[in-house]
Length: 178
Image 1 (tube, one colour):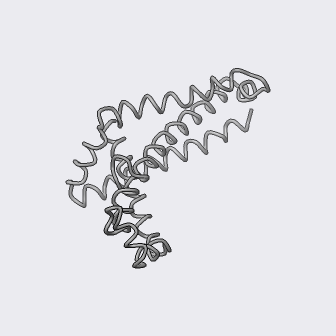
Image 2 (cartoon, rainbow, N blue to C red):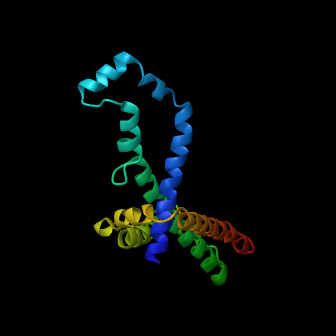
Image 3 (cartoon, rainbow, N blue to C red):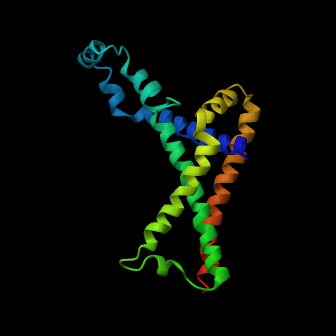
């Protein structure tokens, strides 16, 4: 489970890197950073190539880059979608739409519901990905894998993500019969 979840995280991170690489061709800031006066301004701060700095440090850094943060958020979002899908199935089994119970005006239960939805992804991702920077160890391991193995895991990750999204969407159909 841990290895598969880290593969999904790695795949999302690399997806963001590829999207960034694609969009960087039309990014006007890349052209602005090439203007000599702008290059000199950043050179005073110790940055020789602002485009490389932006790519390597701000976006693609595995520890604190924006893509790493977004990938971690997506991992939590996938768990929330699973939880909410299971909540929809539970409502169907019980035969009552419980969501109205939680979202009544002035109800304390809505805050408990939100906290419950957010605590589980935090616990799971902390245990499987972030504790002792496990994801960094896995990222380094996955970087060394052959292209064929990475390709296979990209498809498996895509299937996992698509399955979670499909489960979430399809969980509303039996709920609509209540």
